[in-house]
Image (cartoon, rainbow, N blue to C red; front, top):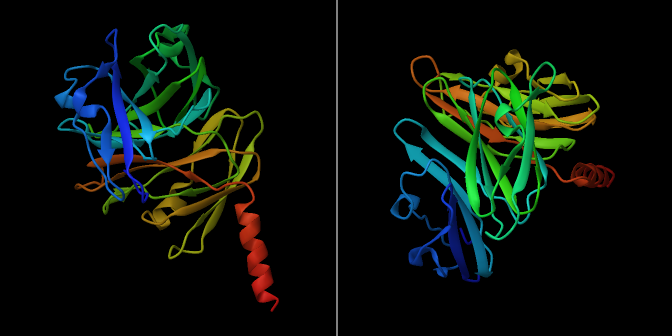
Length: 308
């Protein structure tokens, strides 16, 4: 997508488990006019690969990019791309899946660079557990790999990498084959969390991950026009907990404000909806971080206005 007034020019390289990245003429020096969006069918270039990731390199202007996967068995899933160099430690929150999580990892370095080392663990309601597929794992540059783990209930993946130009996304599997994708994030104290239900009936969920070393005390409240109800949740260090069911069911299609009075955390909604029992579709939506100081600025403006 090019949301700007200047045209953009970019190229897309496809990385997979092959030895070399795939660069195709139809994906090279693509011109995208201002205020336009375009989609590219990866199956036209790379078909039958278990893992495919995309590296978007912009030579003129600016763009925003995301993946979109559609399949008969996996439903619809999408993940926003990373801007620039991703952090070397990320946490991927999720919950209420069917017991399987895939971590798709892309190493975008050039083929002559050294292998990158990977590590990770699973943060649930108890003690952190090793992500079995990432124990002593490494991968070559200019490639993509999928690592699988078993998950249950509210769980997050805390992922680390030694090396540069490496990105990852978590794919989780719903109970009726539908899949969801979510990118990773670093903890913060204030978030907006958007709903992940597509209609009624629904089984909404909201999870809070704390990859840090200190407990986080989080206040949850609905955004307008949701109800005025609030709840406080304590998230122990190195764990993931689910928000109270009574709270999330009060307004399953409303956004939520999540603010820590102590500590930091990462939230996401993980919900089912539609069908006879509200289980036909499954989706996970990562929270949107509120920059430090933004809330203080809003409160300051409010107090100035009321003092006139």
